[in-house]
Image 1 (cartoon, rainbow, N blue to C red):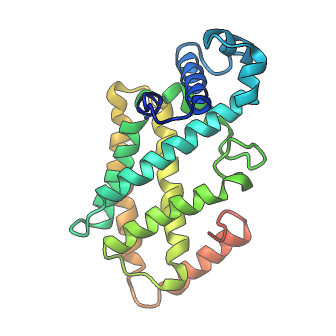
Image 2 (image 1 turned 180 degrees about the horizontal axis):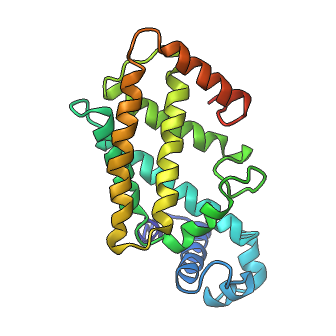
Length: 231
């Protein structure tokens, strides 16, 4: 993603410089670890002065934040192509999760940083931080499209909340995968299959007449606890 952008001759010099600095920093994080790198060391590796580096990125967190945004934009575009009306919700959901594994297979060290702060809403790196609401909306849009294309029948009033829960479900799977040290992350793939099976059974229960009142009550509880937001 970044390499292709860096080679684009149409980019302005300032944009090429920014991409060069970002690539240098991400490479250092992969090799040495996020915590082991300082901004001054990153500037030296990129062959620029520290003030020049700070002009483009005020902190390491800002670099990770941009990486997250770039990766998400790529993911959303590619995931839309994977969703098929011929496949069930579970099949489409599995395709999206496995695609995320593939996209991030060389970025596990960097993702450790995001995982570490994900549930701290006051941390700007967290996907749940207020400044990232547009990102969350775009992500939930994807999962609502997945529900629609998979032919999932659900009351309009709770469809958006269900899409948000599916997005959060995929995040939890991704966080597990980040820490999975089994060969080829085998345990993560097994977890995907098992958890999707459980999720399928869970959703089947709510197809029973009258059960949707129970789901509405559950969703309302999650909202009052601020575990769900209006997206």
